[in-house]
Length: 125
Image: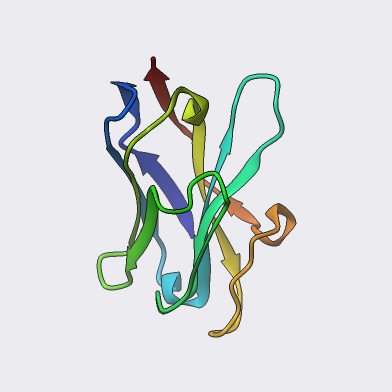
């Protein structure tokens, strides 16, 4: 499985962005998926995750109510819809995959073993 993230950009505070993660490989449905972000000088942190079938989602407090994660197993894509962006959301965003059972919904970074390259999100005030 390989991951390719896209959709980042430079926006003003209050704007929206939709990040996409395209997955290659035949076993996408075996993986829970997550989005993480890393700001300069800070550790990589959890943003959101979604279970294998898409039925369960989990969000960091910082994105609760503003971010929405979704997936389409047939298209092998994962999205992160980000609304009402704030300057504090500025970071490199990464999509990641964790091999799990159907009912598992990981949030710990160590559970995610496959990572894509990042896509930069910059929010100006």
